[in-house]
Image 1 (cartoon, rainbow, N blue to C red):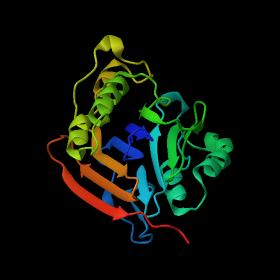
Image 2: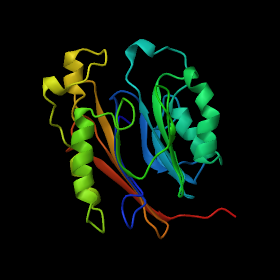
Image 3: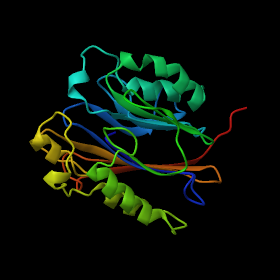
Length: 257
């Protein structure tokens, strides 16, 4: 993922509401969201190149999501796929807190990343570039810098996300998808400097990214309600927010014996 808007314990009926965009090169092979054949308790898309994922949830309500941290000088070839961090958490049974504590000493093994690890009762954040720990209740935004770094897309997206959810007893997924489809670029004076040059800073500044070779490949809405219901909706794209195919899954959380 390259944009995650998150309401954690901030809505009276939905402890978790997530709206996210995954940005990637168009030629990277990807499988759309579904329950995995070898692990039918896990729902998410698949990166067919390295067999990891960027976002997924289990039938027990465990979930994880990943963004890359933009630091071109720190990228090293041959390191393990960051998508394995999400996959391994979903396939395992560790609590989010235990997993973050175990992974913290190992972050230099990976190219820079941000990681959310959650279950029905807790949510933790791990970054290879800054402090980690429990995520406080509230509205949060994450892109390719630290959690809640006020990049233009985070300010714009989080403010609109909050407005859509506050005072609304039943969140509207279609309204969240419309928000994620926002292609407005930020003014040059508001752009961060992350080592990729002004042209790419402009291209990457909207919530929904489009370029000839790279852009938003999918948008996802994940919601869990206080009755144990889980809703996961993914919309896939190839360069335009108008070309999406939608996969929708709703199920009740299973409890482990």
